[in-house]
Image (cartoon, rainbow, N blue to C red):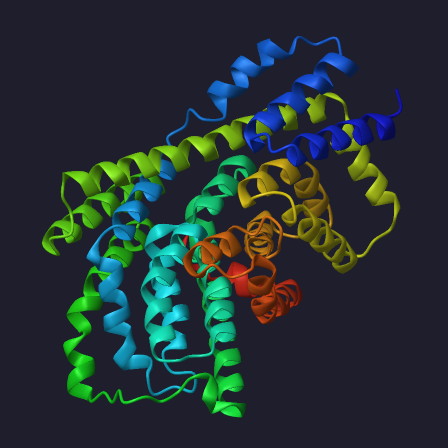
Length: 433
């Protein structure tokens, strides 16, 4: 049968099942089984049993639930609350004032949680009530939080980087290091936008009665130390070679429990809530990874990736035209899928094209993470939009409109990284030879 018909059939079935609210992981399994049964003579259950084991049984994959558990502990303890109190005196004098706490707190929390949704929820629960109380502009507050919350995927340690590294064979340590400069660029871009808007319209961030001295700022340092220490523990142990990403995740969990106990915000109930939350999230991600791995094998058996790669190769696209096409594809995928599904479903097709065009797989990992960040703030399946909607009961499409500047900033950063890939590659190649 013609590969175009096969591809169209599987894609149509995928869209139909996703639209019927079946779980993403189950949908991927069903489409893979259908592909095997309709278009090959291979027994799908034999392959399925191997995929279920091989896609989830690795020491690297163990880092996933550990990082999730660490984020759950921080989410439910006073550590995140103290982060706002500690950052406010340092940022109140900038144009935009405490709106910058959204961005700085998201960047710091991202460096210990690895999750975009956890970062957005944690920071939003703390900052939004305070900003509303001080009559800050709602659109700028919600838009900056939606954009900055996506930093949970780019600033290491990152759960999506772990999944990409496992599936692509790229060093996870190098991926973590490669995300530092782009993450700082994105955070800076968000802050610059807030400052420019506030300079033109100071009423967006009223001055209020708060005045901080240097003594006030210095007194807040102890409130920032737990998060800073966790960042140094997790990332420092990886970069110095003292621990693998999996071992560093375990170190982070121990550190999070220690600081939660010190702050007297950890008891049996909080601990069990953190355990149950991390189990639910880990199972959801594992199911998606296993389902997408199975679908990838089915698609490979049908010869679709090789044919697509060969077809695009005959188009004579330049490397930059290829990136534009892939960017459009990922934006469209982001309308329907979460980030983990985007990685595991697209990688078998996109990675051969990227390497053939001369791009480094390490660079592509960072590019892909930013495109997943874009999907976090695009309706109707933008996870950050749902999180913020749950916090303030605002219309999802309005929140997406508020986040439009962040959407544009992300594509500006993507363009810079595409034109100057050494921004991504220099640091990891220098630190991990």
